[in-house]
Length: 273
Image (cartoon, rainbow, N blue to C red):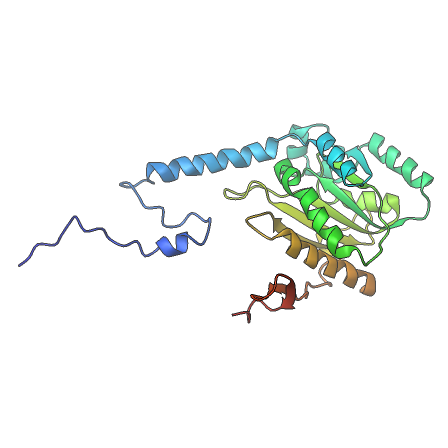
């Protein structure tokens, strides 16, 4: 009886799937442990996530870039005095500190009449996401929203902020809508994921049920163009129906790229084969 060839390599049935996802599958093993390479990769990803959480928000550089693109801006701060307080007291990240609230009230008093929308950019749990993706996303949004003619407040940059702080900002400025661009909690394969939170008729005290969320906006996730398309659908429908949150579903047609054209056309990704 012929002996089996122990030198023959065994095909890994998971390899094809592993190439399609950043998830940690089919890592192999060394005895009862992970292989050294997989363990080192995990530790590196964990360090990236921790660094993203603690990275300081460079609002000065972002404000300069906004100015170059023709956007006015305001810089505010939450009631969380520093990063340690922010991480331990989420409630303080949801409200402006006294000085920032006063400044915003003074601005609103000098610009009576309210606006259609205010965009708020906040560090959240990943300033890295904001540094990389906030401005490119706004550029794509501007391209698609040029026909809507909405009046805008200056872009508001907020340090040590949580999502709900946008409701206070929108209420003070008398905005019909507020859009929060905020760094999401880093994952072990996504330290730079940007989240978009949209609220119609913002006011202090609203719960998450009144907001719509579009998450994972980054180069390896949801593209700027598709995220802008989804957000604009929600904003237009919110203006028409005067609501947002759980009562407003994302039913936007997904833009599909025609193989014979360079322009996206509406379609359903489930049937685009």
